[in-house]
Length: 423
Image (cartoon, rainbow, N blue to C red; front, side):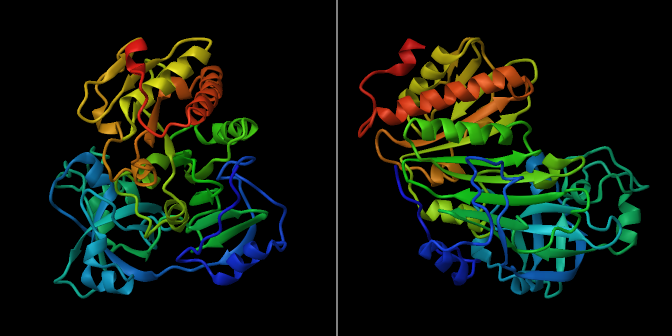
């Protein structure tokens, strides 16, 4: 079992890190992601402000793009890029790129959402951020298309009404308002900025607890973003701890009264350590022999799991076989591996190659070792599974047992047995 690892976070003050190294009290009871969800985790508060800019004009991106891009991508002016210290090398339309938090100050005041910066308008020295408009805006400014950045921020506000009011926002150079770091017996909440609208418990934060480099567990869309995952994580970690393992864990969690997913979701291939200091701590503390990310996808008609990541097919099939052997009722599985045909266990879940987590840019693969017998494993749980409390608890118990079995193989090379053949 590894010892807690303390590393300097780029945003975080050295004083708190020194406290952790000395093992001195931090002024609050010890808390852990093994006991609490990220949304409930608390510790000593420490200010750690990020670059921010007020009175930023909101404009429109204009051109059409795929739905995911229209929801999550923004373009910023050169003036705003300079104010937030965002360089052209940190923006991308597909790979890791800096995220910003945008909080409206008028029209729909305090409406807040996360976006990924994919372009900088080098011709504009002012302060401007452009979001994608709905594809179907009529001459009156009304629309039905909800897959876009305008709707993400303004809701169903008429576009002519919104832009006629000269919308402005405060833009922060970070996605989470707070990073919670568990470091040994010290738990510190590093507040980057006050949540624009927290009166109704609306927030987006990240939590990290670095323990060892054998297994990292990642939950990038926790809280109410992808429902019913966060609540299972403490017991899952504790079960592994009982078996003698000490996983590191990182979670990003958000909550809103409605529209939680659209406000806070960031695609895993684009999530940037430049905007998530807690994730950077986890990444810098690796690579991990195994990294396991747990997500949810929308499919209510079946209880099943899409398995992906860059670990070998035999490793993923071994894990699924161990899970299936522990379950009281069988689930459906679809196992994706680069360059290979998907492995279907029980019933086909349909085509889900878009959520297979095969890209090297995916966070689960970025923190995992690329050595033989190691790798990243992405688990996408269907809404049918996540909305059945008994089946979900059964699955998470079985996953802990299967993960223990995988780690205990002590693989230094790929398995000699083709575990997919036995499924």
